[in-house]
Image 1 (cartoon, rainbow, N blue to C red):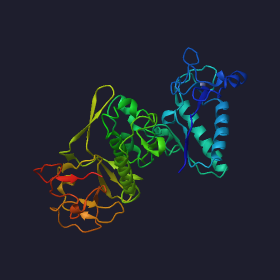
Image 2: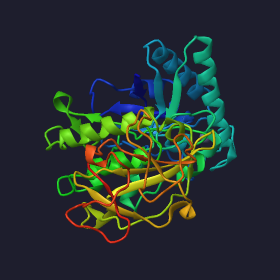
Image 3: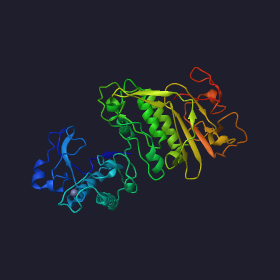
Image 4: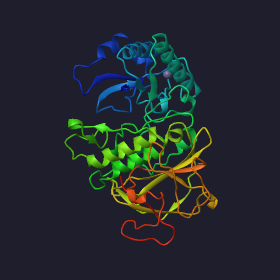
Length: 401
Ligand SMILES: [Zn+2]
């Protein structure tokens, strides 16, 4: 799958990356100041995003015909490049335009419903244009599509890590919308600005597992020589992540996503998970000196369109990790099953204490990742030594990948 990013309806006046790109003459000749978003005072501010780093430019107002004409011209060229996906609305977060207080444009000054309608009209024109060209290209935006745009932007860059600047991300968006829309992990831009990467070397494993259990497709950002980098934006000269650890995790998680996990993670509905206890915490050191504690096993629960339910448990660390269930599913006999392989083979009772369940009656399935060794073959959950200590009550153990 080949995808491209663009800058949405931002106007680049001059690039700071390519000194030859300069549109100042066009700006004057076409009087483009008239199509830009302006402040309540009627002034023309630079765009907030990427300005001073990659470029200097402005936000265009989607109510202006010039914007539609320009976007359609650009997307026609892209369509002929042979790409499958276009994140044309990168920098239009959620798919929305920026605020415009112009008294000259064909909309009331200030934010309002007109913005939503203008953007939806633009999205539809793009899709109509591609359809007329016989192109089947998926359109997307930066950050998850806002609710009014779910039907227009079906695949988006959900880089949840942006939330690390202000707090702890939780997959609420997927909890509400995943059955209607599928997103991907995004380019993870700014992870290196919020996380102390080298002090928390497992942070990429955690971010990858987070996106997996949230139902998002995974992303790897490549650096020098094709090595997996921490994120988009971290210099290639910076020490790279443990390639074997992230490579193994990606391979295993993807196998689950396209295998036994597909009915849940691709098109399923997220449910509130059964509670795990006894899970140790991993410490992620932030660049501002604070720490973020995250469980060493991430878990989410899903319902497929056929009504089956699965809970996913991912140990993303490089050590075995213990966990306990607190009477999952109300202690229903035989409710716990475990797949041993991502292709759906090896369905087993998840606990030796469970009885009366036969294969295929998987009202509930617990999917373990592919790191379980042969000693675990008798059951996905077993009383065994984990992490160098033996726990008291019906412990379970997830081995590392
Ligand atoms: Zn306007």
